Image 1: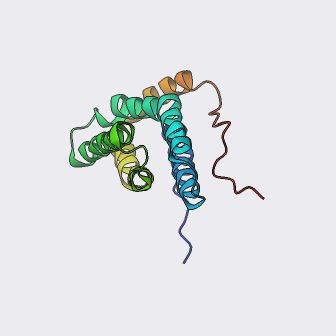
Image 2 (image 1 turned 60 degrees about the vertical axis):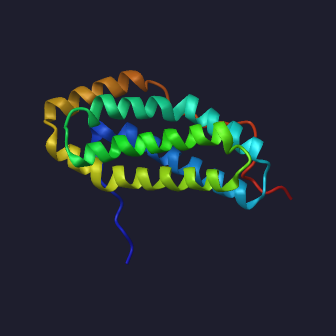
Length: 161
């Protein structure tokens, strides 16, 4: 049985589009591991993606969504963010050469994105008022006035012929 695509409110579509790139990031890390690329290349990509994309994404989600309602789902989403940040810090501190550290990062990020898309976002779309969602949408439109660009020069995830 084929699963139906998730219907996202227009107000949160920007964040959902970014989730696509987060899943793509995790896939690229996994592909790099399958191709046995040097962990230094994976580390550079992890830090690039964190600084250029993920850090701001987490901040926006927390300020605009998860801090609005104090309930178990929002707490879980914020705790997931902490776990992802902690894993990136572990990689940078003592796990740069450990392929398992990158596997774990890809796994926890993928699981977190699926949790947000399938559980947390639908919950927030139901709980937040239309006015609040509209305000979030206005901010996101202003903050994300350009298309998400996910270019990275070292395409380590592509198998060379």
